[in-house]
Length: 87
Image (cartoon, rainbow, N blue to C red; front, side, top):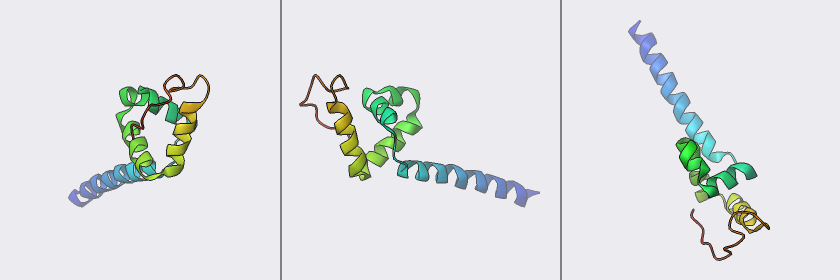
């Protein structure tokens, strides 16, 4: 019985760590990037915020997409073109 309990706990830990690691490799969509930039993600889902931050740290493609989203007319950062990256 003890072995079953230890196995179940180990499986749960491995599953949680695996989800975190795989989540940082997923490219966020445009809506997720905008919510990240606007601070909505930080307030609503700290785990998603951390995953997007980690992903942006290693993905030039997504950093460039976020910059393009900020530069769209009426998009976040449109009125302040000299905004520096937060990531």
